[in-house]
Image 1 (cartoon, rainbow, N blue to C red):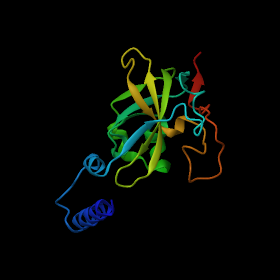
Image 2: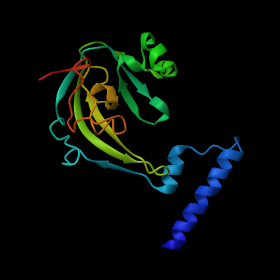
Image 3: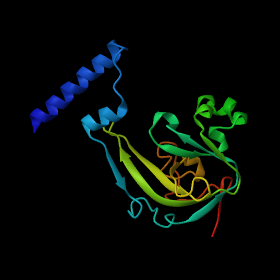
Image 4: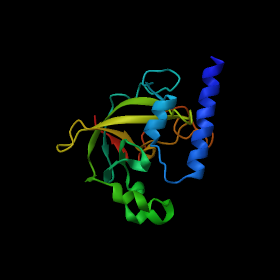
Length: 181
């Protein structure tokens, strides 16, 4: 068991040396995660995250939204609010590069259904992140699964862990979503 840990540490040191000393070698994150192990867990009904009441709820957008594949360098497709793609927000948000990644824009009133909450533990960093997955219910992208930008929710202790003492509840951001019962 100790030998495996030593081998893993040696591999990390060697890879770190390679990354810092040679710009010609680039190993994608997904390969590093495959080497060091990453995990994705559905925590929708876990009492620890208090998310079960959000699962299955239907919403409609109150602003224009957009699809952004590979958003932020990930392999996920996100549904993002104007803050993340509209040029009017770029100056103060520092997000000008993401506007190019938008593949589809949706009008006000686009319907979506919140499906689940997943926890992803990164293989290299070991950092745990939570992601809300929803399904679009519009005509063109019907049943397309997307990751929701954290801005679709009021700040809470789960999505904004290091930014302050927030409640352990899930509430849709009333500026972006309204119930579509």
